[in-house]
Length: 611
Image (cartoon, rainbow, N blue to C red; front, side):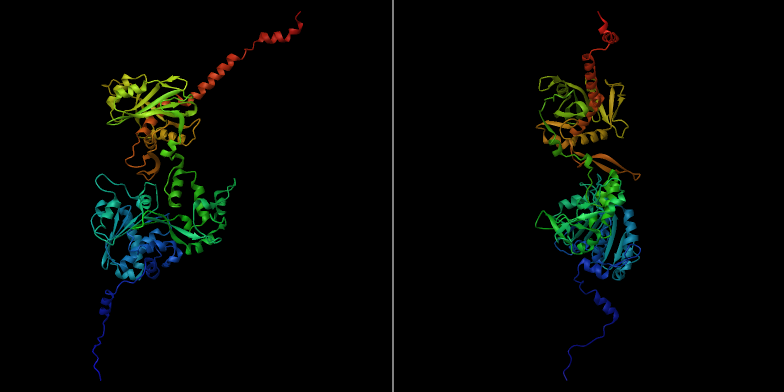
């Protein structure tokens, strides 16, 4: 009998448990892991029980991009309530069980991080058996411990917590709510990304509902190597289409309530024109696929995904229309609809300006030529440390205006010469600047002295730090040692005039329009549109709209000049110029019409009796 060369030993339970740690991780994707191991807790989910990717099939492509070893950064631009948070948590659960490594999640504030830890993440780890076995329930609230790894939770408002540890997996949630960079620290996103530099196989997941085009998430999407949108097949023609808001149709009959109009909402296929209803959506989503709509390079490291609420299986088309109808007349509500439902950046279209729009406002008049309809010239001067920006604008009836000249001066003597020149109409009729407002915020003493010496056409001005009831008001220079002591100082609500300029800029050239001369330079056009109006959250939680520079380093000097020139026109009564013309016409008619007298009536009655 041959001897068995292999001896058989009984394997104990503790040895079996120890051998499990030597097993390689399962060869599964994040979505497969979630379907197999993730359990939704009744405390945090409307659909408790085993996770099912088929309920939100569009999340599959986003989650599985995490398993693409070539992808370093995933950007997810989303509306609210479409499963973005669950997508993030599935990736975290996958890391804990399949690929343990130092991980960090950054939330807008540290308080929110604590709340999510207690109410979302820990319940998830305890509800899923495989995660519960690896989770140390004695962990601190902002540092959760697992077998072979830790998970740090941080607030973007705490720079020290972002710069303390090396991290392989980084998750940045709701980045558009992060505070801006301070003078002492870099912005929180850059600080957090610095923590991943030591790992060649790092992964960064960035997600947020967008706010503005200048917000973190929209800029991240624009900088991505490729951008993907979700396409679904039309149930009628079979063509793959992208669900777009403009394809939602609903009745516009007067007398119908918003709710009634919304109930008849349908989606019209942009390919075949057939009607798509809510009942068609689940099957369309199941057969949908992510397709690249923009590609910046063949070497893909950053992948962006974008979608809107039309794809949500939990929201009917009628609910989206109802939200729009209830929001469309309120700028604050409309911004929320655009951001949170359409997942698009907000722009106040009524006050949207750009350089191209300015260039479209060029007239047939060349520089220095005053249009024949003009009745007065005003100017604005913005004082900088090394130069003075100036602009001269012609004004006519109904606030019709045109810039006739602008530029940079390097001394107040040059400003004095420019403001005293005669600017001619095509028929050689001359006009001079009737009033110029000069910014006194930078070098007040020099401006005051200059205005005192040129008081017949110059006044100092200053932007008001708070909104005013009127567009402007007249104060007094109260520096007793100044030549201008007692002189009028014009305080300006600059926001009101920027509203006026932006609104007039939208009007096509003609009566009431805001125009520029033929051959206007691009630099001027860029500067007068360097700001946009955005919603700003105040410390008390309220939201107000204010004008801000589109980028932190944008020059807006010519915009300030135009604000001062418009204020000067107001001081001179530009809004009633047309009334003066009407009054003159009436007086002329009265002079031309023969005056009626009682004697004439008596003569006409007795004309036949005259012998």
